[in-house]
Image (cartoon, rainbow, N blue to C red; front, side, top):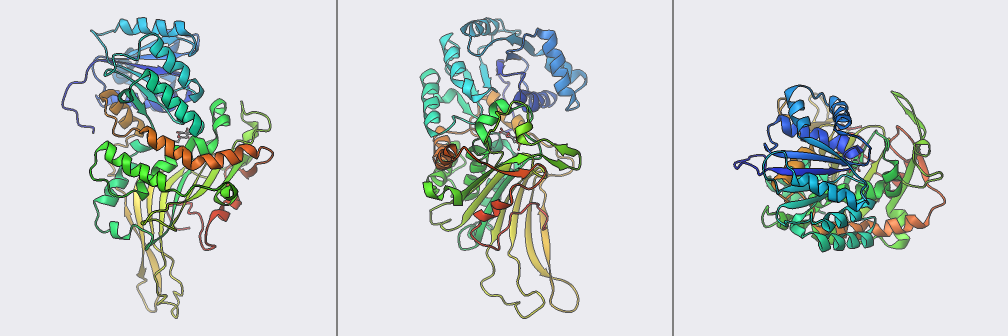
Length: 495
Ligand code: BG6
């Protein structure tokens, strides 16, 4: 995907919400790194569209500040900055789009008819932008203008269907890039290779050998300056409906007939469709939510969610969500998939942990080993990208004792440059490659999975459990487990 044979066409790239959190944390650093790698086409101009009453100079000093955090300096930075123009505008103001159209008609370098519109904005504003872009004719020409829609796509199933319908009224499907940046992560892409390029794995990858699967995305950061969005979203919408369910589909899907984008998506959708719907009276046994209260980390005390700026007083928005799903198909029937995510947890840790079953015979019962812990396969996304397999071996020496050997397949060499998911995906957007983007039926079925939980939680507005900031989340999350022997894995290392 990163090999480029043909010169890329000149292009305008409009970032709506250019001064926001996503642009500052992810988009600008990723685009800057593409600049350094020489991957941005010569004639690519960026238009930073935002509400702040700034001129170009103010925007440039903002960019310098943001990019200083990733160590940006030198000619590469100057080249990157020179690509930008700042355009002040209100997302709901038609005049702003007329002004944008004028700016796009005056490209810095030659004729430029290839435009990307990146919606790095609050999802509530997606419909307005989509309508206004079409209103001034910026949805055409069809082949050359594309719109990138960040997640969450809708607030629930109904609003997602409505948003999709609106999008299709103004843009063709080929123009739409629904982004889930987890699909750009190296480990996530590696999951396919791990599963389908190793004959060793596939025969074991089913209900006969796997006891359960845990998918964890833990973040030590709080909600930062995103209360406006987060307080309405919560962890289930922000992470589970998209990132974690995408990971689940890649772990669980059948081998696709080819690596063609649609063949992969078809298999992912089949998994989502096979997830047993959570019954209304099962929400409390299959899902759990909580909110962080004040706590501490080695760096010092931390506020509770209620004290964060912009959070509605008495908010019951969850900052931690965990859920258990069953996939009712031949491969997975009866194997629980436990998903959890949260803000202000002890560490940044994202991993898929697959626990195998106990050996059918406890052969070592009469020896000091007594009970053998089952094997695990761990696919780690963060803090490091790696794969681990834990197997038992005899400890050298007298007697029958075992130790766990960790086969650590860290597949990154020390000199391999780490690549942020956004670098991969932004380049795909520029090149018009939709392979790693989401098809609407994936979004739709993912909403069908979480909707019963959302509906139930939206009715229980009086109380939400809490956990101290800096902990591993609420103790009660263990109640989701089918077996008392199961515990969350909080590390790629054995506890
Ligand atoms: C985003 C969520 O999609 O993913 C954020 O909106 C979250 O709340 C982020 O922090 C996590 O991404 P990553 O790549 O840091 O795991």
